[in-house]
Image 1 (cartoon, helix red, strand yellow):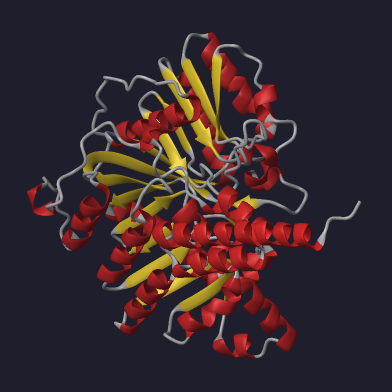
Image 2 (cartoon, helix red, strand yellow):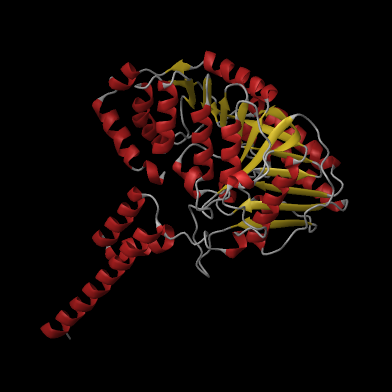
Length: 472
């Protein structure tokens, strides 16, 4: 039986009222809580064009439910607002940058550290396994991708061996990152003595979808030794044994000294959030191991200030001679684009190394569309030939290094939970500058002429990809 015209009119009015209410709510919430105008405008537009579907997407993906989560709030008092009242370790020639780091993070520079460079899985994996094998107290591992069968399954084997001899072993896997491997690594770990945590795993009941909020940090703590950087545990990082043409070049870092305590605190904090269980921070002091000054920087959607963006822009702004940038995914924010352009206009040599062939084609296109702005201001951009380069580095004046897990793109700078370590050490900077120069010497220079002569369809596709760069 069909409804009367009056019934249909009432139903239409109800649907219209609900649609307007949903769109109005999304509009108000986005205006109050989303900091980026492009993102706010996008969500508002989609909620009015598709009131039900757009609003549902906003409720699932647009609302940051992490920032207000009390588990992520530090148990220590917040630093005072006046930076002049804080103790500071001055760095000759880089005092403004060291003060900025303290003001932004509230974390001091700590002296007495040693930072060693480990190239690819050939150097990083044996060093990590040795640290696990010699640990007597604790092993904490957090990674985005953990391929359990990588390196002949050695990581799973060594972790189980450590746990079985009484070492506290905790493994934190990202809920989305673990989906990149099969079989799942947590299924391969059979020792009941290993504690496994999953960071924001997607689930339907109860609903929990945080596809954009990933723990991208890579941390390994083995007693007095820490490892950090951008390298996942994957067979693709073992260049000499990867025969499928999908090898990945990367650098990782071994850290010893007092900075290890700060890295351990970060793991403990992430572990508490993911599992609801607390780990005790070791009371054993970390002896001075070298001359590097280090500061740990954590960033994520739980933080109201984009700390990594602020520190990258600050480092570039104080450069006097050269800025070297290496990132596999390069979609810098307007603030960082401006910092690179301004540095080049001041006469600083700015060089950006990108992979010749990106594993994400749409990112490659979006990046290529934006590079003209840098080339027009004499920023040097070079394409490193295969294999795919996954390194994330910033070197300033052969004196300062930023290393860690963050790419220079909106996902890392705004959405992911990332880890960065500032290192003030001329020795490390010189070694990495030499590595950078060697790569630069065998890379292809990108020119404005090449960009201008792209076929029109290519330019259009690049432009379309660039439109979505805030969301990539």
